[in-house]
Each structure stands twice: as C-alpha cells, then as structure tokens.
Image (tube, rainbow, N blue to C red):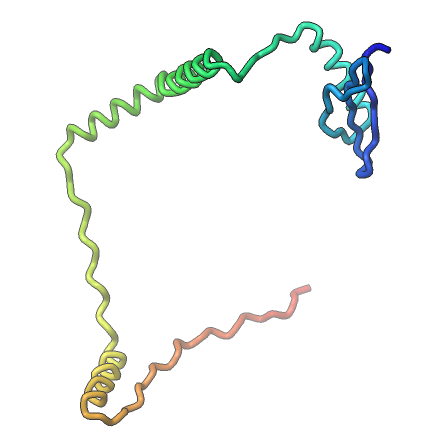
Length: 152
C-alpha cells in the first residue's frame, strides 16, 4: 500500500490532513483550514515541495554556529546604512558638546492659607490635648451642564 494523504473534518468544522506512511502510521499532520479547498491546496503544496526538500538538522553544533553567525550578520546589517551613520554622527556631536545640567525641579507649591491655618490649628490642638475639628475648604464651583435637549 503506498503512502497517502487523508483529509479530515474536525468537530470544530475545520479541515486538516494527515500524511500516512505505507504501514498506516501518521507521518505528518497539517494545520487546520477553514475551507476544504484550502486544505486540498495544502496537500498539493506538500506533494510539490516535499520531493525536493532538504533536511536541516538543527540538533548539531554546526547548525547552532551557523545560526549564530546568521543572526549576527542580520543584526550588523540592521546597524549599517545611512540611518546608522546619522545616529553615530549625532551621538558623537552630543558627546563633544558641553554638558548642560537639567533644570532643577520647582519647589512644591505652598499650601493655601485656609489649609495651612487648619493644619497649624490641628497641630496646636494635638499638643494641648484638645481636638479642634479641621475645617475643609468648600469644593470648587461646578458649571451647570449646557442645554441637553436635542435640537431639531
């Protein structure tokens, strides 16, 4: 019996295919496809590409070294170019320029008179042992909402 592709429809309604060996063992399982036509196109793609596909053994030290070199070359390629040169020039100019310290942060705002008075009264009361209620300033006035009736 030759190897074969078996097309299936899952419980979710999506299609997938499996490649079965000559003894009936599952060799490969596909991703799921929304449409049957897409799954059949996937089978045709595997049939076309598998015959000439190369084997890439990612478990060897040689592959790991080659992959590291490829990533390093890709990273170096991203750094090269006009943008990189411009960035280098800007950073050189910035390092050569005299350093200016950042402006100092503004001092915290002074408390309003009523709040400061209330706090000082509370402090004085706590020292004397009597409690004076702290006066809170009224909330800021709110604006009444505009006319909410729809205009026709």
